[in-house]
Length: 121
Image (cartoon, rainbow, N blue to C red; front, side, top):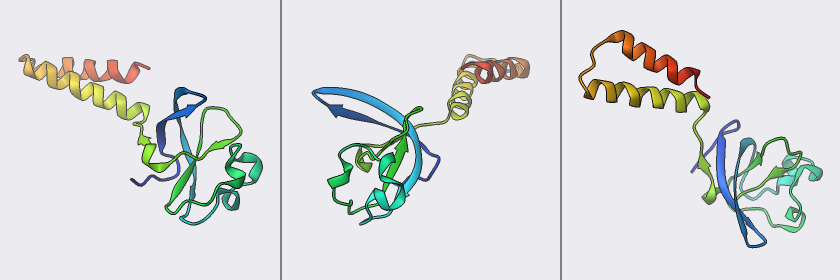
């Protein structure tokens, strides 16, 4: 799976026997065979990556929330997240399809359903 800088991603993190869902934005791409400390300053890296070997595949540094340190999750655990606008448009399409399935042909109703979805969130 390939991502680009600016993509929103999520993954499940596990530490101390607890699982936590994390979401963030990819800010840096780390080429295969390169350690993240070459891409950003070591202070920005998560604790414990100082002695970690570079990965054999392209990887990403992700900023979660307002934290000052990047996360370096395994690529196989990353899932792309839709932007808020994409989610709203998807919801509007579902509502319009549902209205059409129930026989509605009124353009004003469709327009109203779309505007409601775009105003939410």
